[in-house]
Amino acid sequence: MTGLVAAPPGADGAAAAPPETLTQVELVWIEKHTEHWIRFGRELREQVLDRRRRILFFPPGATFALVRWAANEHGTVLSRLDIVCTVARGAPCQTVPTVTPGGEILLRVNGWPKVERLLQLIDAIEGAGIDPAEVSPDHWRHVHNRLAAGETPRSYTPARHRAFLLRREIGA
Image (spheres, rainbow, N blue to C red):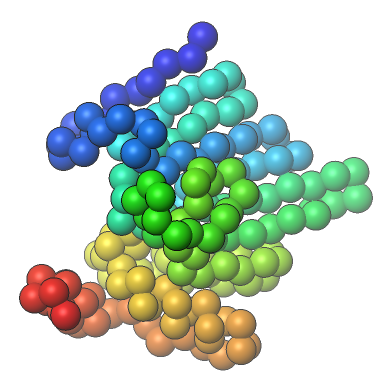
């Protein structure tokens, strides 16, 4: 049986948005074979397809981190982490496997060492009391570029976050 699960308490009126206006992320969990999960992000709804598959629905402008891992009899064949900002239906976007219609890819890393490093950076942001889903998109792009160049990204501090929130508030 499939069913929609309501948004968490305190979610705004966007939870009533029709599913066709939302970005859908299909998650699969087949233990030790294919594992997809959301590291951070706030979905509006969840649809359980079966015990191994579910779909999360995100509103336009939401940021989330999608982790995809797969293995076969020889070991790990895929380790990937994408940080995606959802877009409105019909807007130009980049394709991401399991994400419909796609989104703006803010960061993409491949390979377990880079994925693990990024998970540590996300943990550090949370440790500073900041929700990673609220982090400046420019910071995620910065992290992507620095990791791609083999460099250490700047820390995302509460001061940087306050500056981002103020800039967003004035519309700059």
